Image (cartoon, rainbow, N blue to C red; front, side, top):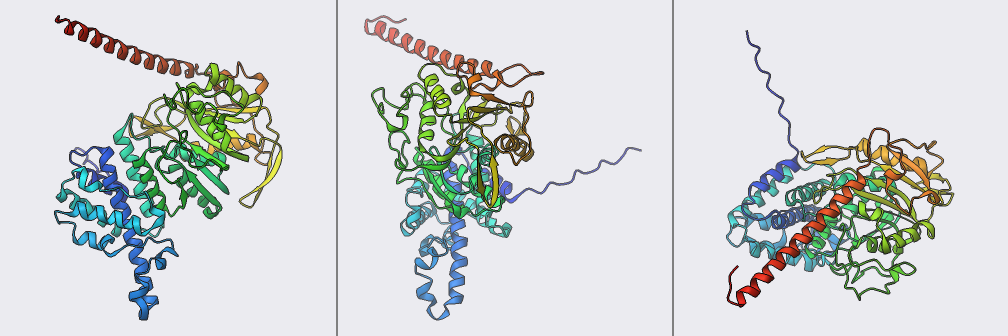
Amino acid sequence: MAKKATAKPKIEKSIETQLWESANKLRGNIEASEYKHVVLSLIFLKYAGVRFERQYNKLKEQYSDMAETICNMPMSYAKDNVFYLPEECRWSYIMENAKQPNIPQIIDKALSDIEKSNKQLTGAMPVNYYSQVGIDPAKLGSLIDTINDMEQHMDDSNDFFGRVYEYCLSNFALQEGKGKGEYYTPKAIVNLITEMIEPYKGKVYDPACGSGGMFVQSSKFIEAHGGNRRDISVYGQEYTLTTYKLAKMNLAIRGISANLGEKAASTFQDDQHKAEKFDFIMANPPFNQKDWREPSELLDDPRWAGFKTPPTSNANYAWILNIFSKLSTNGIAGFLLANGALSGDGDEKAIRKALIDEHDAIEAIVILPRNMFYTTDISVTLWIMNRNKHARTATVNGELRHYRERQNEILFMDLRSWGEPFEKKFTTFSQNDIEKAAECFHRWQRTDMGAYEDVPEFCKCVKTADLKDASLVPSKYIEFVNRTDTVGYEEKMTALQAELKQLFKEEEESRKAVMEVFKELGYEL
């Protein structure tokens, strides 16, 4: 007798997954890059509406005799970090009108009025977006219903809407894929950076802040380790206006106060934080950014005073020097770059050599696996830069730490074989991976963590005097027993691919130009 098939247990989907799937079904033919603003703005409106309603009811109960006056005073909300909402901006009003044909205009006006009523949201809200994006009002009404249903799944944590917002951000980045989605750095990578540089207290800066993920994870890191997130001040800058708005909304939902500058602007051409120095810098700037300045522009910029001027062909070293120039006396930075920055020649090599030999600023170089990013499949590098590698003691979050002398030493780590599959074609770090890598770094940094040892195929401490031609490629120093070096191969292939694309493009342009000449002469080829 055949055995009866056992039914597989049904896996309960999280509210984040359920919301995403429901919202995605209503997208229609709108591109993910456009639709994300529709969904994320509505999540923000729902969040603001829930917070406002709770505060409204609290005030009404507390000031029964003066409720009408108190409940309509913006300062009654601002004191508890709640956004004041004029009547037509409230979620209840949006729900009442969700099925009306003019619902896109109602939402546009609500977002505009919320921004006008709350100074901290200046520049955060989309302008007339719903009226222009072309979403069907019926589908928009259904999407509003979907987001309204979130409330019945809300838990007791203060982070509910933040989790939903982040989940949608990551999924939109996944859908947009290569060439887009730069606004989102995978959470596992951000967690690794925060665990390594430990931004407990002071000023935190991200010169290419995207949707604000570095700041969110910094805040989570502090809370997870028993600190107080009020001990950090957040500064950032973002070039793309729509991403600047996403960041402002993301941080607002998290209750994180941040200075992102007066406007969206280029960090190089219009630095919004010129006079500031920072204790912690976390960044994932654009990889291998070309033509980031005009040849005659920024030649005497104070950020690269004492160094060669970074070449116009690639912004990697401009980002490095921007970060270095903004570190405080004891500042530490963790930032990501394409692997090619580890061994570039010419002016890049001169800058790298000065950072190593004259400033002793490079503390660690960590190679990450391929396919960790949604926008590119290449392996990239995490750089740790430190202005203070001296032996010292320091109290961090109430804990006395003993740092050993690390002058003229660099720790190299290779994590290319680490990680686990994510969404079929991507790689991510487990929490265990992150903890293991951070522990290795801190054992090397400190004497109170136990002894540090070099481990073949994983880590190696190298004297700067022993570096080979100022190269920071980890595989030149880490001992490999079972694996061959693929970093050089990957970088050469990436460079070759870019060169071939450019050659093909130039060839096509030349062909078209020749055909035009013959056509003007009355001949067809």
